[in-house]
Image 1: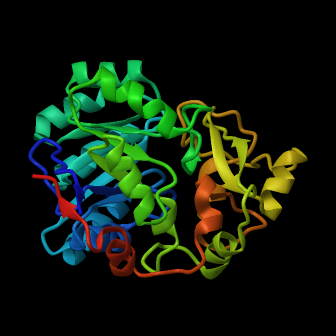
Image 2 (image 1 turned 90 degrees about the vertical axis):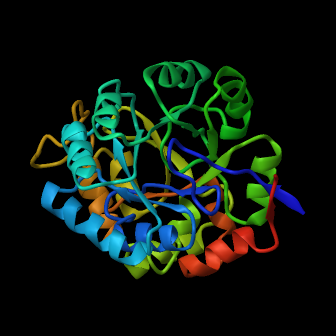
Length: 316
């Protein structure tokens, strides 16, 4: 069975055509990114909400685990320190810059200054075409079925053919990648690679406490719902005590650190995501893709990668 495409993003060529989603805040840290990189994918550190010294430490940790594998960073464009975080990552020798939750033209200058591939997350063919013109080395297509902040109310698989037809750079599909059949379907559609978030959030290497994982394992089909983030984008999340408070308009922050360029202050996105990874679900927002209900156990990154790629061969 020859099914795997060769994924090349600028000078980067991972052993397997897979990028691990950058899940903030502090879900995708150095341990997870390093483990995915070590097993042949592209591991991402989620930079949103991190201080510069913390980010440098996480990059070092990822490198110590990765055994020469590819380590990148994913940061929300909506973050007030977006460019600062990305520049620190570039100065620290990160391999790839991935930008989501908004669109930034300025990130391409950092990529050019440090000769690092830039990969925007897009939800339309127009954004993909603009990315290519600005110098993107690939784009990630993300739709309504993915976890976290969403740029569209249409599933990624519906958007994908439009983007594929609009650009000549690699196109990576995100959303709903839980088992091998899902990634095979994506490759048969013409995807150059896949991005996987939710399945890796349910790994031992993800930086979360047991209540976070328990929320994933208890999820049933239809539990994931959309919540309007203070960022100004809809997000896919699982119901918690905290989301009930948000629905009652009882979660407004008492203080603000101005972590976003623009914020509705309906609740604090940074603090709620930190509380979730700490397992405090009365204060925490748990992001998840729509297919989270199909996950029935927490696995190691090594086992997840084996389940994805065992028996598959490259198209040559």
